[in-house]
Image 1 (cartoon, rainbow, N blue to C red):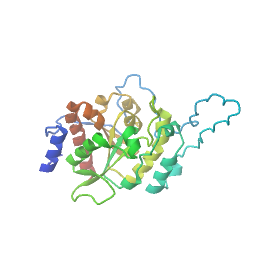
Image 2: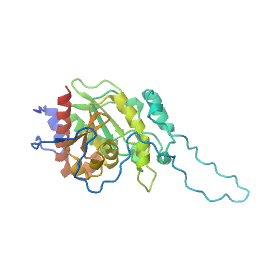
Image 3: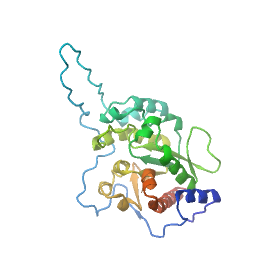
Image 4: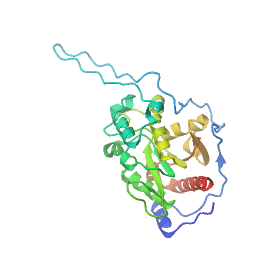
Length: 286
């Protein structure tokens, strides 16, 4: 595609520290259900519709002292699958996520980051890793410095995250979310079964948003969104980039998480190339 940038978009790119350029190398297109056959010893990645065989059990507690009341066990409940969520509207989906106890991730949650106030149909969808402390406190994906950088990246391609109000004229809507809606309990990483369980919420979000392209940002977001290309899902991010994957029929482009770009600004130029690839995908859908 021939990319036309106005002064505002160029200013946003300067904020990112990116010199305006277009990637010259051809990008590969992964067929739906296909993958990168160059992966070495790939580990299995859970299907996005897979469910845990049984809910995670809480850790055993020491017996209560003599005369003390026994502590109540956490109220683990059956996991809500896609069938249970597919008829929910935004408000009901957000309420269900806020009360979900389907897996062990709920132990780290203060607030779910599935925010009905920002619900919208959008051409762009950005999916990040499980919430960090800031996101958990705010009950919203991509906040603080990483959120500001994501907003600048989206502005550079003519998109704006929804805030519940009208969008500026001539801009595309963007919807940002986390791959899981709960912060991971301290001291561990999310398990494949937990991510697969929570993907039912992500699939319902996708059905409501109806995006034309998804930006996957982060190791665990990639694990879920590249599940239809399991060999590619095990590769380092540098080898995942530059290919259009698919998740339930929606094109997926892998790029760097804003947090990673803040730590390593030299990768911002590569992120711009990924955004150009996503714009190529959008151009082909028009």
